[in-house]
Image (cartoon, rainbow, N blue to C red; front, side, top):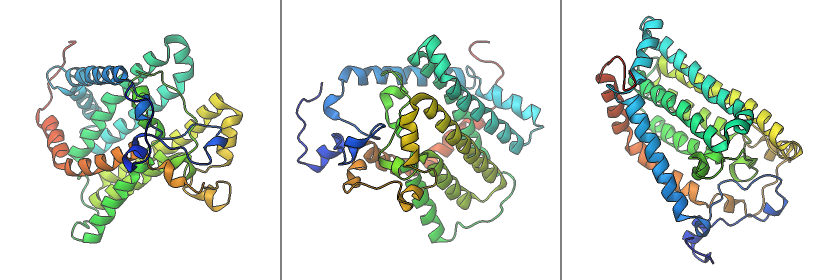
Length: 327
């Protein structure tokens, strides 16, 4: 263990050692985005590093790399089926990914009984990550397809609005995203019932964040291809909100009903109508390490845009090489 008695007298320690808000004693669900440096295990994080490295290596070899992977075969098959139309290919990818992602999430309770929570998480990741990579690179490479509906690049206020909306959108990530040890199946994955932090604003924050991010990128790019992509993403998250409530109700029963009645999907709606009362020290539910990481990550992602575009172009320019490592 890294420490035993955390000292919370400095701002930095308040970030790495979660201070629960005054309302935490009445929680029926879990405290979102909580993190305690003193309770972390060095062995767990070493295992996390090894596991993530192994998955990313397999992803590169078996999916991304042209001569050994199958991403190019997948896209090529879709292009043949869609007559070369990038809009139809995008529609196909944007339909397949939600079916796989949400489908496997729905199967989770029964599947975990058979193979275990950790094994199912690995299966889920191995199915979702390749499709996510392909959709992201395909979007970057074809984002200007279909003609330009409008071009607002010369308006400084638009650039500022796009940057601000994109930045804010990442603070609406679903709190389970922060549990990296569970994401990588180092710790046993749980279906958490979150109740604090961003959940007080919206019970399905990732839907809100996706709408903000999609509006920002559509405003900037202004193409039919982008409009289609954003519509597909938002539609997926709308379904995921309904499906998420269903899964949480099945898992947590009365506790979920309690949280549902005090929260809303529409941002700030429960606060406005009095069902959600923010604690006086609500700010402590945001002064946490995951949000510090998001702040740095958003700046890094903005600066990395040229490299993302170059990487996607490299994938496209590599061309189609039939087959892969497994034949």
